[in-house]
Image (cartoon, rainbow, N blue to C red):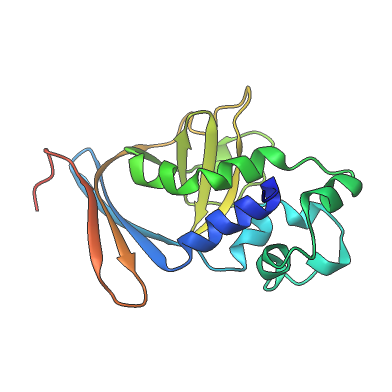
Length: 180
């Protein structure tokens, strides 16, 4: 059976061929945002920047190194870093994206002590996904802090998943209130 680190890498790899398009609404304003998953983004999302293992020093190759089992969960534990929460969230990332009905415009400058650089925030079942531009920036369990506090709330009106190779789009969700 694959270890948790490897499962998170597999789950992330399954997202790479897709781009998600969201149509959001807030007080009569429509906003369109997209989210895609470049290989290099896995490095930070999985917390590998905190590990200090030489085999993971190349951000572009980190996902491949894990999928080839050159670095495992045991290696990370040996480095003294606990990242299991992030990896569990990555395993559920597709679900979070496809069922999410609220996206917040992230206002990090209003969050005391937050150094997260992001434009948008999704919150789902106790974890937060931060998006910078069109890529995931960070993911982790929300504990006492609520990062969405004070952030404008956008209702998800439509979610499409586009296959980047073929260009085919699949409608995953459309609100009954959505008017084209």
